[in-house]
Length: 427
Image 1 (cartoon, rainbow, N blue to C red):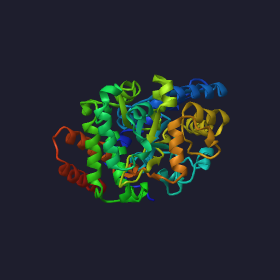
Image 2 (tube, rainbow, N blue to C red):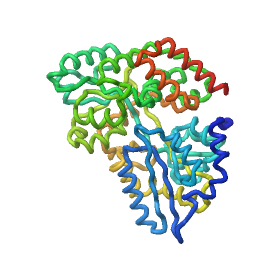
Image 3 (tube, rainbow, N blue to C red):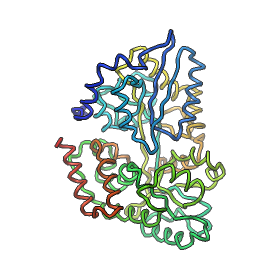
Image 4 (spheres, helix red, strand yellow):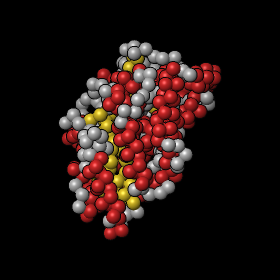
């Protein structure tokens, strides 16, 4: 694959910040100490990641790691662009696949020579490999779907394994809704329409992936999108919205996971295994014994969307010494005994690298997702190949307008087909 011309906004940002690169805080060492500025988005493992960084500092007293985390309800990409135009440019940051590689390509260091790149599982580097250069290292593998409360389902007489079609799911949702007073829940779902990534990235992918054969690069190279399963996508949005805590357009990730699901105020949320640490912090017994995950059904099939959520990138504008240490740290995190133990035990990650004992996957959500992967019952994360800004700024925002009654479904479809084509063609 050839790297496309960097988009206009990214080009302007990168050009305007070139003169600042030499002033980057990551480029400066205090005495003999190297400072690694890490700017990352994954709020769910923030504390655990910071603890691992301290362990690295103890092994490497000449290194100081400064971690900034921007995620959840905040716009990581816009914050990253702001960082690139400031004097606090990070040494390590995150990219989400080929679209981000296109946008930030001028800043990405070739990581082909790292131990982590050589240990990455087959297919996990596809979205960040350009002309033989590996420009990112995978965080982990993740899966998402409907996370449900096992106790509530049992009390309602619902078998989650049978919810493999929209019709079966709808019947179960209506049953839960009818019993919500006895079940002591506020609603069946907590549907966070405020979070445009929930609908724009994850939900859309479930119904669009088949158009691109589940391949992120096919999506990345496609000049258009057809919404062949648009009616089914509408059904799933309508179902979640109708039976959710209201108003959904002001419901965010924190409220969904911490205030509603973790406190057992709702029965189902559309999320992935990354929520486990948060639920565990709120209620360890609930996390360990009473949560499960099922796929969002499409065409009467239950396949779990599994992919690499994000990649670590090393900024090629920092000092060579800093970049070398950044690669060393990332290698240590995924290939050392200390790092591997943290990846499984503390981060609760599904590894994207060789050399891990899969039987030690820590939490029940990740174990279930791993089983779907082992059985081949998965679909790809093609949303990472959508045009720059399309998922959230176009589709996610359109879902908000649709839910508010400001746009019909047909208008939503036509608007987003045109937006995809316009962005792809550079119009």
